Length: 397
Image (cartoon, rainbow, N blue to C red; front, side, top):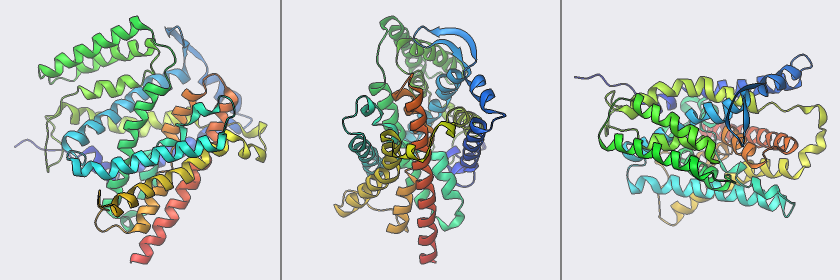
């Protein structure tokens, strides 16, 4: 009998939330590097060092920062796409009744933060473009905070947060593709279509080797990069064609190409790519800012969108669904614990920083304000969520 490996998601939920702690450490190092006199100049110089070549005329010469944000993050989105596909084919989103609660919670948890953001920025010119920044949840960071409470958090609550975050990621991918694509280059887009056709044919012919999919995915990434659509979308599109062997009620099959690739990618993404992204994007030079910057429209809009918008949207969506009989609250989970989870959903971090860079390209001041808003909103959400879950566990003990 072929031995089966533990599911990447199940392993993550039961002990590999260490990726969340590494992410926090990377963000802290970025803040130190950007503000210490001995490292501030080096930090900025390394990130913007030209490494070439010119892969896209719109982006110009490739830099370390571009390789991380447009290259390595495509692998992050490839893993996101693999997780989404697995959950729909062989996981907790495989049935319609399983999808209702996370879809409702995620939809409300994206709409309300966007509304809060737009209400705060009002009609200030150009700032409305950042409406999607507080709409996403950072699953590694959120699960990392939850993991600090150990067995005081029921597994059903961890799974609910995970499924909500996965659906949330789906929404973020759609937003990036539709809302943050300014110009389309037809020839490059045609090349991307050809690469997708190759992926489709290989999938239909049941090719099980991974390297042909990865080669076609690399070509797809290059064409998408040149087309004007953000290159990371290529990761999700490639994942959609990776074959999966369903293993209902059992750990992942080592014979499944999707599961093999997910297991191979997961540690690299959790412990290298996402922390590297955090290190490259979370560093805010505070020297030029005073406390008054916290009242700047973008900072306030992002922070309140994450902290207030997320908790209102996610908790309100779950409460409304249960109240109307559309979907049931997970068994063994109290409302206080659901509220604590909703607070943790306000940890936007990775995806929020990513969308912030897309929303205000070329405007260094606004990008810095986005970073401050993301850090403030995520930190408030993490501390409040941890406190609520700790108190809820004590009251149920």
